[in-house]
Length: 124
Image (tube, rainbow, N blue to C red):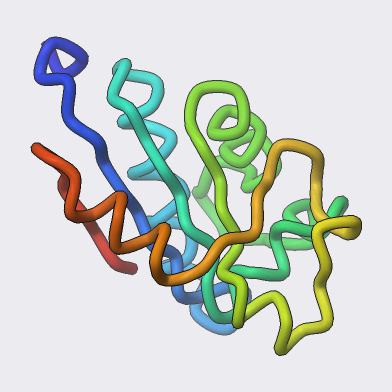
């Protein structure tokens, strides 16, 4: 049913371990939509940018939540994952550092995605 809508869901995660419930909600909503066949783009910004690095999602722990590495893997397979250019730079994260399949892109790409026909953006 959702896939037939052919819409893009852009989810921006602005929190990491500093606000675990908000972080998990972003990943969980994005992964749930991707599982349902929705075209999903997850943006890692602020403290969530750290999850673009290998092994960092495994350090995230939140009771009664799906494991973050599983959600990230699903999103890499079924959607797109992007780390914010400025957020990555502030953390000295380069394209060579990130998990294969994660791109680093900036505001122009984000705006292009959220302004595309039928796009829906959520910020957590």
